[in-house]
Image (cartoon, rainbow, N blue to C red; front, top):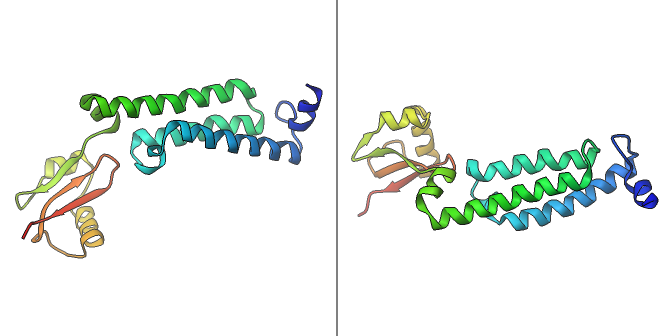
Length: 163
């Protein structure tokens, strides 16, 4: 036990070596926790997926600097990773649950018209939508666009008219 205390320090007063060693251990643990949480935790970039990134960073940083005890901190982080995986899994089984935790797309343009009510709901202005149209589709008008959506991850996608 004395050797571990010498290597990792105790409390908030660590040497550069001790804090660096803690950082290495937390890095490895974080990598394992993200494997438990699943690939979508970084791939989808939805609010549901961003939660794990923010919480793991906040929780695990406490173990690096010694602000919280090591094992309870790791336990809390593991619970967050398992909850994320469980929520994602349940969201694939139950569409309503998935819609609640992951969100739903919001239609912004269809049938040749902007949907101003949905644009307000999504906090997207006309100039925002036109900027996204230019960036994504390299056109300046909706003439060739069937529909536009704000996806559950906040990105705006466009569907071209067929033919």
